[in-house]
Amino acid sequence: GTAGVTTGDAGSAGSVSSAGVGGGSVAVAGSGGDPGTPDAGADVEPASDARPDVVAVAADGGGACPASAVVCDDFEKYADGATSLGADWVAYTYSGSVHVDGTKPRAGSRSLHLTAQAGAHHYADLIRATRGKEVLPLKHYGRLMVWLTAVPPSSHWNLNMSSGPMVGFPDEQAKFFEGGMYGKLMSNYAQRGRILMNGQELLRGGGPEAGDPGADADCAVAAPAQKIVAGKWICWEWEFDGVGNEAHLWIDGAPMTEVDAIMSGKQCQGPGFQGRKMMPTYKWEGPQLFDKLIIGWEQYQDTPAQELWIDDVVVGSARVGCPPP
Image (cartoon, rainbow, N blue to C red; front, top):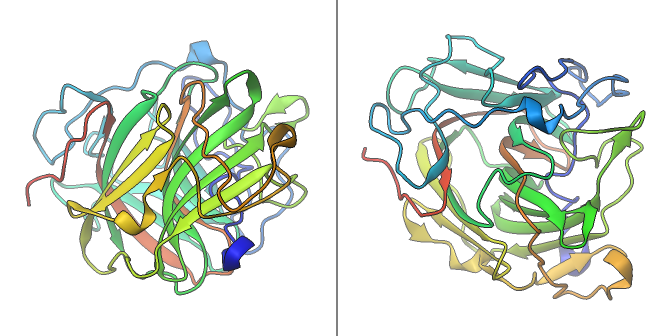
């Protein structure tokens, strides 16, 4: 990639859905080693009017959700072993797994348990999306608690993404991500056209699975030193500002200033959208609205097998901080 960073259009892959939302389609594929050919009917986004509002549940192992929250989940209401999370989420897997269990709750009795097989372009996600309708405020804050068994030493990975259509271009997506690469943290931004299969839109957004077109822009702010620690619960907070075109990250309440993105990245690649000149500081342009949220595990280059847990998810218009220990 540009300036020595190969980001792989972070978080823009997807071809299979393991659970439906609001009556959406259900399909399972790609659970083997290398990604295979997507099912013809897989990962199709249900009609927007079939998606109910997110049901707020406790996000701190028993406390109430903050008033500013639009997404709030501590995974306590789902059955042990659940792979379908009802009306709240679509569980999306590609050479990975997503389920709720009691193997490592941060608080309460359950958390979200994710795995990904060794290799490249493998995903284990929860997705909340409503095509063309606001899922998250244009400026929003998120928090999740995460336990990583290991931090990949070389490949690119992400834990969360928010995206939506660019102003004036409903089929071009602006995507904000937080994750890491080369064992350090990294903020990522991409512009990518919506991907269709058999005339229907793919839920996750396309690429970089086999046969998908490349991104129009793929930008990053990579940390020279700041990193996440494995083997314990970490409070992972982010801000995505689609008005001021900024992205920020905190770990355990401390600002990760090395990955602050303000108006642009520091290294970018791709042809540029609508003839916009590609340069290292290509503009991070917010969408018209954020109509998709993804949390989970995504890996874009060859990566060892991964296992992690996520708990106490809150996303809304105000920063909520870390839950009590």
